[in-house]
Image (cartoon, rainbow, N blue to C red; front, side, top):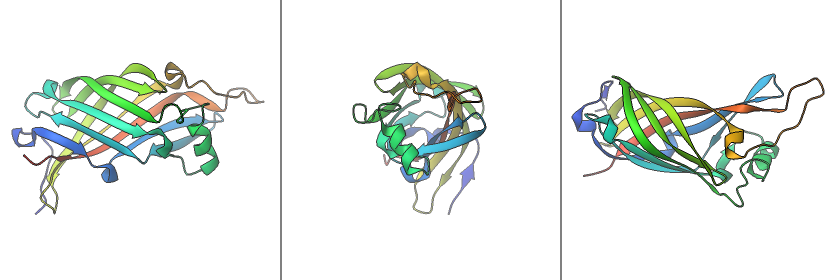
Amino acid sequence: MTTTTTGPSETRTGEYTLDPSHTRVGFVARHAMVTKVRGSFNELVGAGHFDATDPTKSRLELTIQAASVDTRNADRDAHLRSNDFFDMANYPEIRFVSTAVEPVDAATYRVTGDLTIKGVTQPVTVEFEYTGSAVDPYGNQRVGFEGSVTVNRKDWGINWNTALEAGGVLVSEKVVLEFDVSAVKNAA
């Protein structure tokens, strides 16, 4: 039997592992100043502690394989893997480690942490909405969260760009990072 609840409770407090097949970490950037390009990372691992009673005791660590970037265009993905962008040959991983979690309201959490890309670490704060919990058909307790944050890619040394003839640049400096997370509670 699958049950879904929208409010956190003490029974959901525990250690969790991200389910990579049901979790998406993606990004959105403007291309040629007229459209948006969306991408995601297909290889990631993450774990953390969720404390439904005292969210300030929660924590999260996430590691993404930069080579798994996927924008549905092989040439663009190869360029993103190069030293113009992620420089995955020298920096194969992108990491996020939370440093603080604070409740905003009954279903929203502000997660602050250190995001490391290309060997540069910068603090970011993401507001996550708790989207519910459920016991799946296999008896696993799951929790879900969604969030996003806008960052400036130049803060991590991702500076490549080219000017457009009509004005503007090919790739926006501002990038929206998107998180759709499904985590499974570890067995006691």
